[in-house]
Length: 269
Ligand code: HPA
Image (cartoon, rainbow, N blue to C red; front, side, top):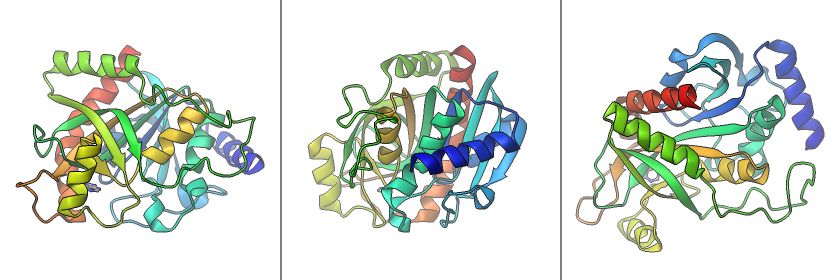
């Protein structure tokens, strides 16, 4: 795997001039942030050696290097999900590559179902912890060059970056929730009792991504910041039918707030 990571990073370096400091993974229908990136250098996933190819609608599958909020970034427009049939190593491969490109911080976004009764559709939630119900991407032989066999997970989401986001939320008058993200394999949305169980476990929102990438980033000691857009509610008594179209539509509406926060964070970092 190490060889493949190096090969892919070397390819990207050979095709681009920007050396990113921050990696950004954009979730379902949340690729609009890339419009704000300046000095863009774009690679299609299909042209990048060893990169899986994204299959879900709403994920266009491009790697964009450029400048956002004055910082050099590499953004994934479209990510890989376990439910698409990729292995956990494939799902998390781009995070390994971003590390080899030189990133020292990772930003992640996703769409999720809110389980906290105080949440409303369209809210942004700063992820401050997660509960993993998927296979762990670090199962298998450990590559010591990448990180430890038993990585610490006491601060999966950087407190410093959460505090910065909260300050910006206050300054820009953007309402921010905070909470724990439950990661599931999908592709089914939750049954009413599953939402109830995840809420009981301590979850505030549930979705089908993010956790694998965060685990792998933390394996490599990269500080992580993540925002979830609450696109539907799994709150007892308020559960309605949910579709991928709804998730994309609500995501697109709230994405502008998320982009503002991330851009301002980059500026102040
Ligand atoms: N459950 C799982 N994943 C999701 C949801 C949900 O309710 N909403 C958006 N992604």
